[in-house]
Amino acid sequence: MDLTSTAGLWLAVVLSGLYHGLNPGMGWPLAVSASLFERRLSALWLSLGALSFGHFVAMLGVLLPFSLMNVLIENQREIRIGASLIVIVMGVYLIITRRHPRFLARIPPHKLALWSFFVALAHGAALMLVPIYLGLCSFENLDNGHRAAGILMKTTMLAFGVAVCHTIAMMSAGGIMAYSVYRWLGLKFLNRGWLDSELLWAFSLIIVGFIGLLTSI
Image (cartoon, rainbow, N blue to C red; front, side, top):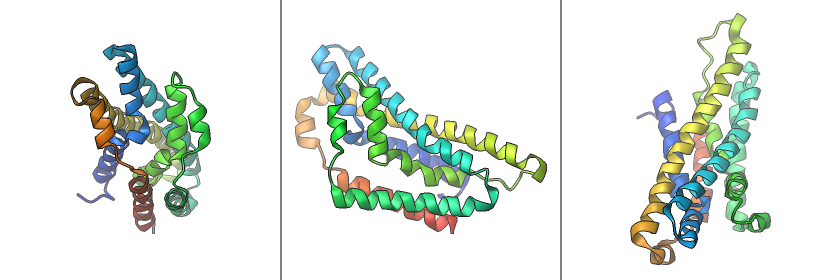
């Protein structure tokens, strides 16, 4: 499948959501911890819901400004190039620093939605969606009279659609991991199966950024 096609880009939205969900850095171990501490399964789903809500708001917080920028039709190519470069720089920054922002450790465990929101911003999870989202924004079929209003409506609705689709995929993958650890795998899996995914995460940002840059050029 051509990743620059509409179907390919929507697939990228789903796959990036699954990737975010499987990544322990996005918070599913916290849902396991909450359910084990409270000794009830419902705590796991409530925690996953809070994590997903924070992730969803972070996605929108980054995508919506780009949807407004896309009204500038004549600068569409420059916006896509700029967004791709920002994603690449974020990936390089994570490779160089390899440190978690300290303020994340100060957010108490009961504020999972807030923690998830800031993690998605601090680690560039929301930025990863920007080149994919901008690739979905196509304006060729709009006439000049309805162009500006049509673009604003289309890009805003697309931002919500991308955020919803991505978050559902993220919650599904994270939920499967969290439930599996809680019900079958146990805490030993976290001790043995935990991977340092910082480098993988950083390189994935750079790859997505370069793909967005090449498709926009």
